[in-house]
Image 1 (cartoon, rainbow, N blue to C red):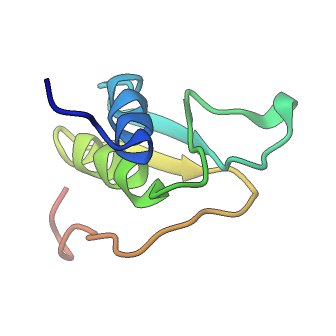
Image 2: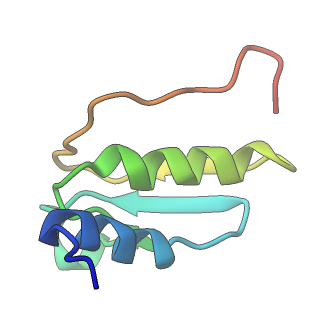
Length: 84
C-alpha cells in the first residue's frame, strides 16, 4: 500500500466535506468560531476548497462568499465574463 503525504491527505479529506449546493460560504482557517462557514479552509492549499466552490456555483449559478480571515492560495480560475 502506498503512503499518502499527510498534507495531501488533509486536502483530500477537506474536499469531501465541500457542499454541492449552489451557494457556499467559506471560512478562513483563522476565522472566529462564530463566523465559520459551511466549508472551512485549513490554511494549506486553500485554493482547492475555494476553486471547488467556484466550480460548483457556476452551474446552475450560485454564489461563493469568503469570510474574513487569511487564505493561503496559489491560483484560482474565475468564470469568464458572461458565464454563469
